[in-house]
Image (tube, rainbow, N blue to C red; front, side, top):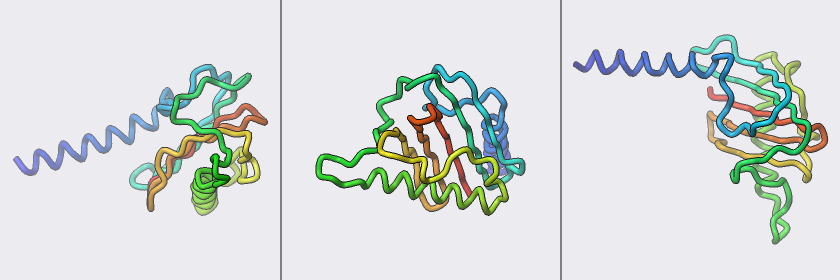
Amino acid sequence: MKKLIIVLCICLFLCGCVFHSESNYVPEYVPDGYVSHEKYLEKDRWMDVVDYYVYKYDGLPVFSENFKPLKADENGKADYIDNVKQAAKEFIEWMKSEKRAYQLKFSLDDITEDDYAYLCRHESELIELYCYDTGTNTLHYMYSKW
């Protein structure tokens, strides 16, 4: 019975990896209405995952309530902006270490106070970040787990 449970857990994990890499997969918080998209998926998907998606819009989409404008709060603190930039910086560094920096369609300089972001997760070995650049009407979705 114990072996069966272990085998089932492994199968579920592998199925999850395959589903995530499917060509029709759209991350959960990507707003509707994009006019084009590009996906840059990790080729070796066994343990480390570094996926990057780019969604183009004709204008500002309707975001879920999770997205926040990248502006200082009423007390002038920019903690959220700093956290978003730190997560993006770590993602960029990971892409560079994987020799995939050429796939990136943005830089830290593109993250401005006119933009919107949703920082889902930023933990020691996991980043999940949505950044919308109002200057180019582009949503960048970054996901890395190592």
